[in-house]
Length: 263
Image (cartoon, rainbow, N blue to C red; front, top):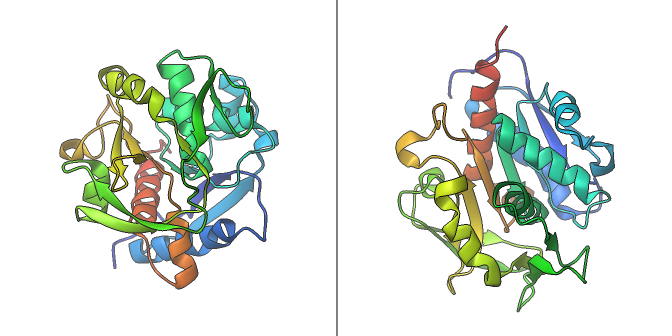
């Protein structure tokens, strides 16, 4: 068992609108607990409704300042899309370890398009069907209840987390990234550092990461220590009693963040 990173329990902010009947939400607490146990650390978490997140930068940073990691959870459309985006923006800008799954993946892409690539019209086709720039749009085939292969980009952080070239994951969504805007993401890699690193067998993006490559996993001063998001839902593994490496990597990053805090 790994040596504890610090004696104080980690604090994880779960951004989303909690629903006890939602399977993904049921899987999140045990997935975090299992990950912490493998690392020999203690962990705590708070469910934070999107409507409670302040939207001004300084206010959001203060609101989330005591947390060691932020997970934007499934369950969109959220009660406050702007609250979810403010939390994601803060994690991205303050180097707070971030994990987004399903709706978190979708909204992290919207934040990136708006704030980094300056595409202010970027929007979600589910919450705004009339959006002029629906970066998140209906999938050709719904993935609700689906299981599929994810091919991982060699040399990516994601591939390093899994330790293999592919993984089989479960989904529960009917919206995903609109391929019409793929060139904007790919063209902005040098500017913002976000790149897709997980794909379905047809080549459709299903995961992304922000920051350094596996050659610099902690990202140093110039990149983000941990910012990953997936359209699939790794938390569902816990409902089968299974440990998931991506959640363990997120918890480990939160531990490093806590250890790096000034006394």
